[in-house]
Amino acid sequence: MKKYLIKVGGVEYEVEVQEIKEEAQVLRTEQFGPALTAAPAVPVAPAAPAAPKSASAAAPKPAAAKNSNNVPAGAVKITAPMPGTVLKVNVNAGDTVKKGQILLILEAMKMENEIVAPSDGKIADVNVSSGSSVNSGDVLLSMV
Image (cartoon, rainbow, N blue to C red; front, top):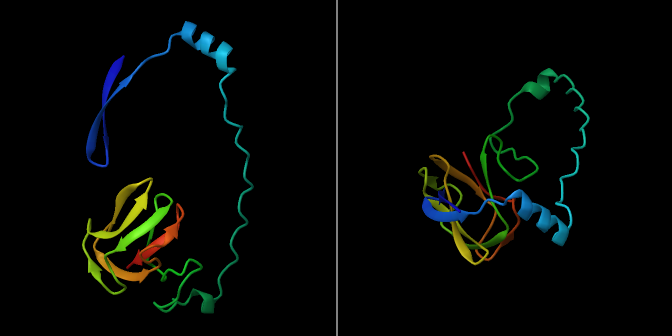
């Protein structure tokens, strides 16, 4: 057995890992069948080149413009890292926040996860409320 020290979210964990010998691997294959392998990657066709923009399309959009995710143009999207339930929202639209400030608490797998500000900024939009269920990748709020 080998011991390793792993740091997750600032908390250190000591783990022990056992190396499987070839004989043990053969026995395991006989008991459980061959190991699963990943399917080969499917090639993706390259995207079509973008059409040239006209002079009117090149003009900057107003700051209030929003994209398909209801996020103001130029804003930083803060997304849910995992599925869960929003327990508490600590900020409102228009609030000024500092890097590392707790924006909201997300409960996932019976654990409370702090979602913090990635940088100093201003909250542009809050897309969730206490009690909301979210999926991984959902936009929780946006900052400018």
